[in-house]
Every structure is written in C-alpha cells, then in structure tokens.
Amino acid sequence: MGLIENLMLGAQTAFSPEALLFCFVGCFIGTFVGALPGIGPLAAISVTLPLTFGLDPTVALIMLAGIFYGAQYGGSITSILLNLPGTASTAVTSLDGYPMTRKGRAGLALFINAAASFCGSSFAIILVMGFSPLLADVALTFNSAEYFSMIVLALVASCTLSGGSPVKSLIMVAFGILLGLVGMDLNSGTMRFTFGTLELSDGVSLIAVAMGLFGVAEIANKMASPSMQPVVPPRVKLRDMIPHRHEMRQLVGPVLRGSGLGSIIGALPGAGPTIASFMAYGLEKRTSRTPERFGHGAIEGVAAPEAANNASVQSAFIPTLSLGIPGDVVMAVLLGAMMMHGVVPGPQFISNEPAMFWGLIVSFWIGNVMLLILNIPLIGVFVKIIMIPERYLFPIIAFFICLGAYAVSNNVFDILITVLFGAIGFVFLRFGYHPAPILLGFILGPMMEENLRRALVVSRGHFTVFVERPVSAGLLACAVLLIVVPLLKALIGRMRIPADG
Image (cartoon, rainbow, N blue to C red):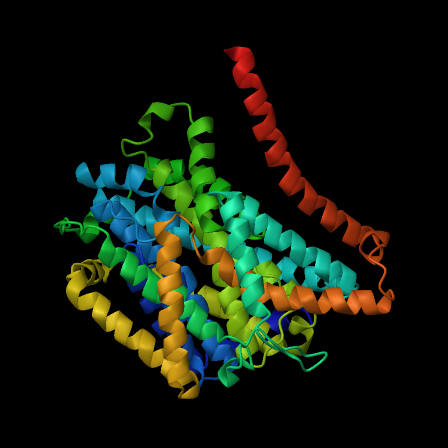
C-alpha cells in the first residue's frame, strides 16, 4: 500500500472513540506527571502498565506513548514558571525560560514551549513514517549473528552515551542481564536462579521490577531528600502569549535546527531527549551572534531545546518499532508492554501489524494536537496540582503502585518483588547508580542470549560467525570503539597532566 492508504488505515484505528479517549488520558497523565519534579515518564508508565491489560493492544500503546511525549510538555511548564524541571530533559529550558518569567514574559515562554514542542514532534513523526519501514526492510535480511551484535551495540551505547559514569552504567546493565536469566531455560527446561521458588519459574515480573525501581525507589528517594518550599507561580494571561512578528522570525532557525538534531539523537541507542536538549542549546549558543543573551531570557534558549527533546522522543520509536531495539529505557518499557500484549516488535511488525503501526503514527499527531490545546488553558490547573504537599501525594502514588503490582496476576508475591526492587533501587540511587540501565539489560538480555545460542547452533559452536558477516562485524566494531575511544581519551588526558605540570 502507498503512504496515503497506510495513513487512512491508521486513521481508522486512531480516530476510534476508545483510541481518542485513551490518547487524551495518556497525554493528560503525561503532562501531569511531567510537571511533578523528579517523577518522570518512566515511573508513570511503569505504574500505569497494569491498567492496560484489559485494553486492546493498540489502544494501550497509544495511551502509554501519550504519557511519554506528554511528559516533555508538562516538565517544561514548571521549568519555565517555577524553575523546577519536571524531567531531566527539560532542565535546560529553565536556563532561559525562568528568566523570561522573572521579566514578566512567562506567557511568551509558554507559547514558545508549546509551538516548538509541536513542530519538533511533527518533524520527527515524518521521519518515523519514512524511515521505520525502510529500516524494517533492511533488518529482514539480518540473521541471529547480526541481531546479537546489534543488541550488544545498543547496550554498550546506552552505557557510554547516556551520561554519567560508563562503569556504573555497565554494572547496572550486567545486573539487568542477570535478572533476565531468572526462570525456566526455554531450550533445556532447566530452572535457573529460582532458589526453589515456584513463583520465579516464569521469571521476574517486568511490571514488578519497573514499578519497584522507578516508582517505589523514586518516592523513597524524594522523601529522603529535603523538601523544597512551595513557590507561588505567576499568573499567565492569554494576550501575553502572543509573540511579536520579529520574535516569530527569530524562532524559525532554532526550531528547525533543534528538530533535526533531536530527531537524529533520538534514534541513537542510549542518547535520549536529555542529551538532545542540551546539545541543541549548546548549538544555538555557539551559532548565535549574541551568545551573552543566553541565560538571561533568550527565546532561542527555550525554542531549540524544546524542539529537540520532543523530536527525540518521537524518533526513538524508529529503532523500537522497526528493529525491536529500544533507544532508551522508556522505550524499553514500551517494548516490554508490547510483548506482554502479545505483539512482537521487530522487522516484521510493520508488515504483520499495519493497522497498529500506522494507528500509532496517526495517534502521535492527534496526541500532539491535544497537548497543544491542553497546555494553554490548563496551565494554571497543572501548576495547582503540583502544589499538593508531598505527604499527601506520595502515599497515594505508593498505594496505586502496590495495587497495580497485585492486579497483574492477583499474587501477593509480586507486591513483595516490587517492594524489594524499590529498596534495591533506593540504595542504588543513594550511591549514585541510576537504575535505568537495569531495565535495558533485563529486557534485551534474554533476546541477546536467544540470538547468541541460535547463531552458535547454526555455526556449530564457532564464534567466528559474529565477524564473518560484514554487518555483524561492523556493529561489533562500533561497540568496541565506543568502549575504547573514551578510555584512550582518559589515558591521554592523564598523560598530559604531568607534562603540563
């Protein structure tokens, strides 16, 4: 079918009453959660996963995706008005957004946020429409060796490109891979790492792990941190949002550059919207003729990172839908949600499930239009909601986490697993080990093991199968370079210090 026919097929799915309702629900929850400092879309998706079990798989994914990209909008509201970034990717927005608020231009900053976010998302959705089917066609020629190498590259990239300590990220990925080994071995039927516990024969529950690491742990970490004093948000009038003609011209370049940069970075494993927004801000500051304005209310400093982080979120669906390889940890949770609903992501997903794929694409447009409409009249509502004291908000969230863990299989054991991983995640956070890479290793680990075994069976145990095929060898070479290059840079840096001294 052609592009028009595919979009019409997707429109039939996305414009159904149920899909529209849950797209709105996802966007609303995402905006609300994005505005809550420190919670983020990962925790929200983990908590709402059990609620999707009774839904059609397409509708469930539409809602979960709406939470993901809706959080980018919501996080910017508090960054601009209160200097409280709701998500890490919107932290850079506060550098110029909050100074604009202090100058009485909060309305303009919020308009720029909404417009740039919509343009960045739209640009990336077009790329998803064009590149996902092409990438899936290429991936159909891959065998087990290439899939194994591709997963290795994705895991290494998530450790080296995501910021923070690569060694700590590698430890977290390895821990996630070990978790993925728990349960019955599909090839031999042998129980592995179950310690005689019958409930672990099917493995550790993805929902219990996700809700523990990113729900319970985040709440515990926030409660252990000193509470911030409530800040009174400024009043925003509709007429204050209308930009002048010369300001509209100033926005075109930053939005286009941010959209392009964010789309490229979002499709890379391990990068994500945080890196995209900071790189877009840095690019605008370097190319500006007046870089001294940045940090003091430059409208480009709001437009570029907002376009970049929203474009990054949408383009992250390219490798996830076409290859079955998540670009970041949030996409890993969405990938797990697809598997739990019986949907197999990968090269054959687009051809086997065209209504689902194109329905998701059309729902992205619908969701971003909803967010564009939601963010202007409901700004005051969202700001008031986030002013709810933490002593009331956190127990409510914890209650729904436990309820969701139990509802998956009506088993108290899942609640215990959730609490256990909440404690583990809290300890990791306090020692500077972010638990996000655990989920990547947990989801991709079994896929890596399956393709490793399959490739070795075909090659009769010869490991040379991974370097004989050019694509597999190239992917492994990229993974090695990602490890070696930072080590060489650090070694050269240490050698220069004594010489300079």
